[in-house]
Length: 140
Image (cartoon, rainbow, N blue to C red; front, top):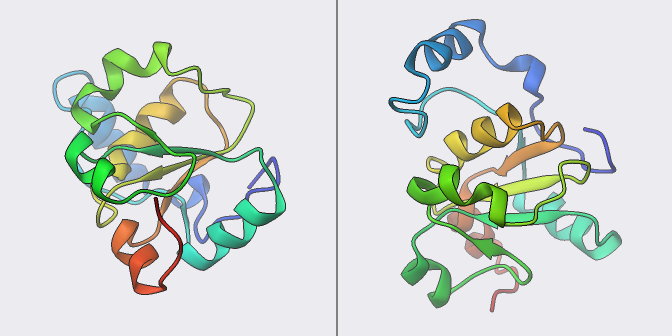
């Protein structure tokens, strides 16, 4: 992946069928958690966060989930509000973004939404916060 962020998968691996279905659904149900998107493992994300400060973390869980436990530096917008709040988040489309949720379902549509808004280096945390906690990685 560009900008120093490597990922388990790549956007090129996304199924053409999934992308066609997403295109047909369009604005009606952009947030449906189906298909495959690029991913980064919890351990690899931790390592990359230690090596660079360019990665932007977008946590799309509910505010209550986020306040209980989150990765330091993450920005929280529930996935259902992401489309309307994206312009006000101040995310830089030239820098890598990792979308985070509990189990890597809500982050799928977040990745697709970001890509449709010109973010090229975007992926989800493989396994979500469940994977992060499984490895006993630090949280706030």
